[in-house]
Length: 415
Ligand code: ATP
Ligand code: MG
Image 1 (cartoon, rainbow, N blue to C red):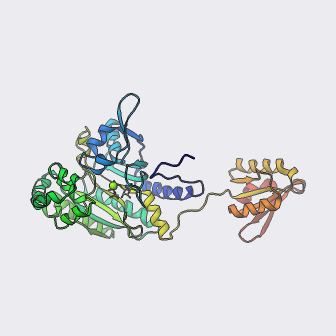
Image 2: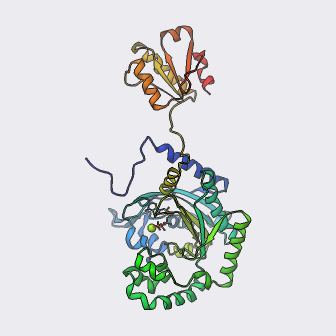
């Protein structure tokens, strides 16, 4: 037998309804906030992620599925959703359209990680991207969108944690302070952190090694090194969130794992799923578009892990949708009636009523047992008698009650 690759999952036909439930909520919420869908390829030139995500990140250093195609070009399976959108924004000339451009995506994401609960090698993300506004209202808008989705799914958590990591100007003074703080401890840090020390010391704060975490626990905080513009942006964001009634925590330890962030960063963190509690991470990345070859364009967005979101709903026993079963099961009264029943089922379907009939030649009794197990809302028996009288009894499975109507009116009755 050939097994599924490590760290990947099937969505079986018996639970795919949960994904449709999530995706419907996602699409509806995005639309209510004025975001429209963008679809980008599953793979891109490797160069895009090297420049867009950054060479000091875990993603680029350790996690990418990179290979040479048959034309010897280096390509990489999407390790996140944002870089491809930035590429499309530039290549598609989206800057020529009225700004801001508000986009969302639903996409598989590939990362070569050590599989564990809430950590897969292929997972799925809902992400939003708001391009062309530098306003703190835009930051608040994407956060409120995520919060609205959570509320609609019945969640009071996850909790919004926000921080500001400042612009390249603030970063200069901050990096100097951080290097000074870390300097003496550098030999006790992991190899990646020692490398980050020169290239991008801020990344060190996002390291997951316990030894490094201990050292960084008392590190200087970016919010104490913000320039006037970054400071007033961060303060305005907080007052907008307060006015909108969105609860949040300022959490100076949030720096996010990707190089492209500037200013606002945030995470929604849940208590319901153990160690991998971050279900959504995002922020502002005003330098990404220019970094991958476009004109400077302010942008803000987030990525949300849908497997983790579904885990939260299930752990908290919240609704996750209903199995998708046709409305009615039509049982042929006898083997000789199979053709008639088959015709009736197809006639109902052509009128927009979802319906099933027997495909394996079961006895009437076995059919009813099958219909009960699968959970059809209604059943009906169709045979010679029904054909002759033109009448049929529709049974409601929930309470066994029956309703008689003309066969020709079944579709209207079921609607
Ligand atoms: P983590 O710190 O857990 O590794 P991350 O910072 O790498 O997360 P992002 O790149 O911000 O995560 O991705 C956005 C969201 O996607 C995460 O908050 C999480 O919900 C989800 N996610 C990230 N990596 C995985 C994975 N390997 N398996 C499942 N979900 C994931
Ligand atoms: Mg990660």
